[in-house]
Length: 184
Ligand code: SF4
Image (cartoon, helix red, strand yellow):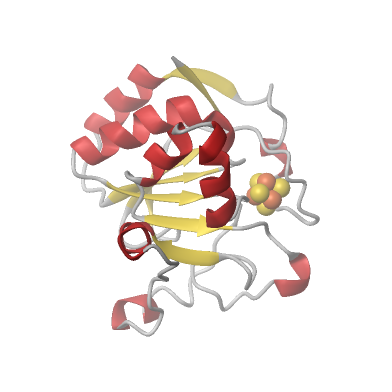
């Protein structure tokens, strides 16, 4: 199985979720958010293809990383290989964040036709969901670009069957607030 990526894995990021993380930049997105900062990741034939095995080997050899972050592009357009990668990441105790232009509710809807989307949620710690909306852009937001996007605590959301957000008042969150990042 292969996955199309926009760039090689990027280790040691501190702006794509809590802690020190390796970012997987997936290639391909058709959401077309105006003012998207990564338009080069939209073309579904762009980037380069890697085998899932290659990616998992790289993950296995990572040093001093707290987790992985799937970004893009939109990782959910490649759900089959993405699911294999997040399963492997969890099996070696990496926590998993995922950015997507789809909302959590849309992912649940998509899972009615393709159960892989629901299975995928079982391996996600935080889903940063929703389109980038330039009118709602706010540089003070934590780990996201516009205020419609949510930092969803997926395990708690699944358990409680209602959206549970990561609490932004936690002290640890404050330390990240001044850092800037390029959002999907
Ligand atoms: S902001 Fe994200 S979801 Fe929107 S077009 Fe760009 S890559 Fe796609």
